Length: 299
Image (cartoon, rainbow, N blue to C red):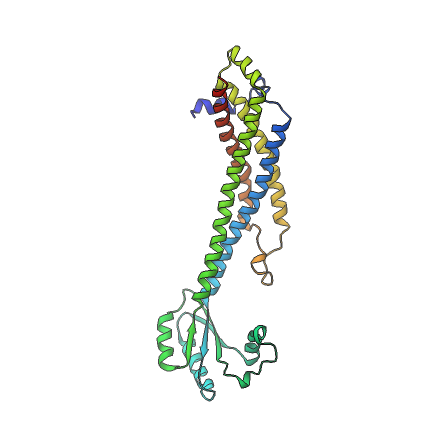
């Protein structure tokens, strides 16, 4: 499409705009589809951004957290725990270490074995919680030192837990992005149908315009301008309603986990403003293609 053609399509021509009915089925369909798709796009965008934040947070938190398990005979647990704590506090990159109390370990096991679990009668290992600092610590080097000085120590850096969680969050983000693309495709398809219906309904008007010397570019421009404006208005309304809905979502909290904090944050609130512009662009391209194709068929 040349620059001259685009200028012709953008310039307002009241006489040409009369070719397209200002109301009726096509107008209602275009407004409704644009608004509904923009509304859904806002939530898909919010989900994509929230999934990205969730993946980054899970990766960061689990990368810094680790657990040391002391599996030793009962008379050696205390000594090995003390030695392990000393080694951990001397390890560069370890910010904090803490041996869990019997009550804390009982609370961890309670969901599976009940609150009355007799820990003293069972060979439950001693757990040590490790919090890493930036840029982290040498996991392999720490494992070798623990193996040499604390025979019953088993270091779990949560890698097997971290990777599936991060992969799941990233998959959710990709799904949201695919949803946005599908929303754009559905919008283009529906607006194309509406434009085809409007052109078919005005076939006789198109023939008369051709008889008086109107070129196809002039006729197509009338349809493109009208449908682009309708899509812009509908998408803007849908975007506003979508952002209002996102604002009503619960804020992020530790209790709610990944079910909260699905809204926008900071400058992310500006991203939905692009949706009406993209919707108008989709309508522009779809209507132009539909008008050119239909006008050739009516020739």
